[in-house]
View (cartoon, rainbow, N blue to C red):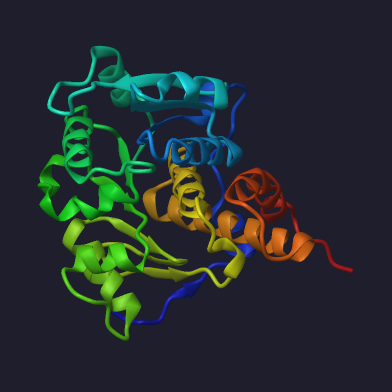
Length: 285
């Protein structure tokens, strides 16, 4: 694989375009976020909000029963569904139907137990989601999951540590080549800190974002933005590029305006403005 990537710019994204939003929330796609735990329930909130901020029309969250009541109050825009107390139990019929009908399903934000994450991902995969986005713990257990169980449209959003797990070794000097190995191994689109690679060797680079994005929960916002774009109907590589760009641009806007120290919830709220800015036609002076 070549280590030369196409640089993504607003002009690139405008040329790619976005699906017509239509006239109702139903035309902008349905996303389901599966994750959360008693220790980290907020990850699902951040990811879910981000998906709506980039234009997804409808949101459902599937979380453990220990946190489902509080999630309903914190994110009133979402339909809330409960996972079974025992991860070996099947998902309810309602949850299975919601996952099967969703345009994109994000699994991982907020999970903190590998065994429960593996069991949940297996049950989600049995529902045959159209597009699956994996983040956080769902990436850590992916090497133990049969790839043939997962949908063709698969997007992975690892950090460098998770990329090493997916590789089965430490990253080398050529990150694009390493991400290409992951993309080929899992037949997926991979986004890692603004480097996006698909399974046939295409790669793109987002030269935006800064240290302010390195804050707790930022990765959950990023995963939600990518999944939201996928729910809107974008192909996996375009969804990863659009989601990663608006996340990075939101961070740059916050840095310019407020300096270092903004929160992940601030990034989520800024996504809509970053998206609007990117779509706006450029005018000459």
